[in-house]
Length: 465
Ligand SMILES: *Cc1c(COP(=O)(O)O)cnc(C)c1O
Image 1 (cartoon, protein in one colour):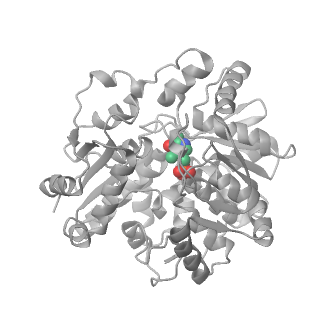
Image 2 (image 1 turned 180 degrees about the vertical axis):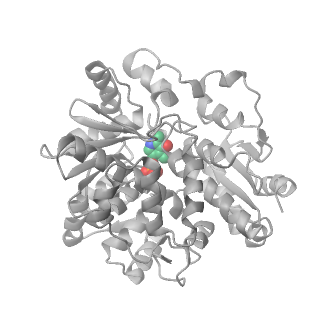
Image 3 (image 1 turned 180 degrees about the horizontal axis):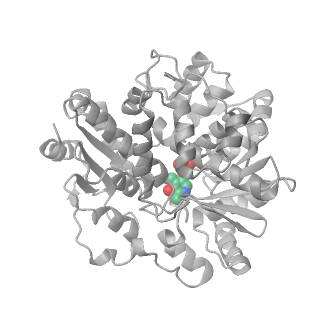
């Protein structure tokens, strides 16, 4: 299996090269040259597989340059850090299935992909005898999941920038209490956008990037998408076995279009109709909902909500979907995205809109609706939703068909977003063991001015060479 760019500007590369490249060199995103499909015989065999066994089968369709025994070792190591034996268990609450994706070390779904990515990086670096320095900016969830993905790894140093005093206290502690010598937390005196801009500037400094073997972990890395496909297929097996239905809907709380794009790939490798629709759940940042309901993809201002990991306007994985919507036409994808970066908008005609609406339904959920959903779900089912998951459940209720079961992805543990939960139900959620006593642990963090040179100097002195 080889990988190509949505903009057609690179010759096909292997999986390992795609993982190390992250963003394609022509500015596009990497995708498999062809999408594999799962034949009915394999499907019958996979029915009773564990999460890890299923991961191995699915990864093998997309990875042909890592030996199967090596791949299985990577999978075992990646999911041994999860606290639930099923990794991503499915629970039924009333008429809705909740797919709990928050049993990893940082209690959010990003662990499913970043534990795997960290181990894939380690495997490749050992093979080639090289080292890398990961740099990233975070507004909260990605940073801790990335840090937990590579902590203690010999050939990797990680530098994560967060806006000083502007992430939640729990999110900050989840990052700064990891004191492994290869982990560097940098609190930037500024906003998330300042931190993000510094990281971009550093990656654009090509001599610096090459000298220090910089690597990225953001959600455009193909390995992250790949890891997320597994739980869609896993949940599909569970629900079809339990309900006898062959066709189901998924509701996905969405920001960067990464998680839901993994659902789109799952939908395309499974038999037709297995996943009827993907329900694209957004908060008040409704760019993607406007896209699905009206064919209008135009950027506006970001507003702050109680589901901050979805407070995003430009969805970095969207280009991947567009490539498929345009029947793999790389010229058209390139032209549209270059245009988009100039004027911040794209329009889709009725013909395309029909295709889009065959794949997706969507709702933008307001703040009162989000908190209301947490409250009523708790009183009806004695089950706490975090605000991101509540957005998904609300959209699922609005968009699902009565004829097919619906699975909502639970992207974070409610205790991670305790303030919103407390506001909704009048008391705070129970603290899980992973978050207990964090404030008493030793922590390490460097506060720096929002200046590219300052951050580059800091990295240059501590980078692995
Ligand atoms: C990152 C995140 C999301 C959004 O996922 P995307 O892949 O960016 O769409 C939703 N919920 C939580 C808790 C997250 O951390």
